[in-house]
Length: 252
Ligand code: PEP
Image (cartoon, rainbow, N blue to C red; front, side):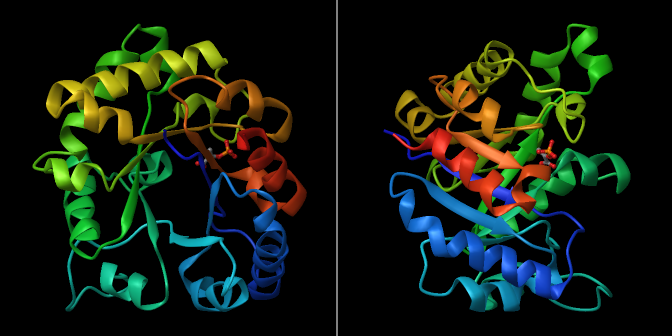
């Protein structure tokens, strides 16, 4: 049985006070959702303060990106060890904004993934097609290519420590949510790819989140699909009630 996992990607929003208040507001009520794992992923500069605000609660801390290199002359970068040092358990990798704006390739995501695993972080690896790719009937192929490239060289023992987020790019921040059936189809395909590469036992364990305009009013219909194990939430993660409204949709 896979435990639902709802993570908030705060992107480049909030100031220090707002980040701490949001985190504390979620942490205070996190115990109302005992059957769901919850995490927030604030900007790097607020990780420490948010970590302090959620200490002692069941809310997990994650980062939105990291450097593949362990240390050294990489101006402006943050290593996996730095993330664990400030209390991160999770790191989002290969978000579509990083792929599109910063030109991160599957090979880049793969290097970061291996570094995150080596540092005992739980990576949340994002995959998903563009609208033009969906319209050309290439969704399955694109997602399979992202999976193969991003997870190259990942052992079975490492794979079970990963989370995948299926985020159709056309649904991110647009208010256009994939239908539960559209999302479920891709989640099923992804689990099939894991089964082919590893085995069915491993495929059954991996949590696959859906991301793309998830809100409290559409969460339950998405999260009740058999292969949708949680959500990676952008906009709706910036309000305590909205984020926890989504968590309520995952609560059994
Ligand atoms: C995201 O950025 O990962 C995301 C899913 O954003 P939104 O929920 O705003 O569509």
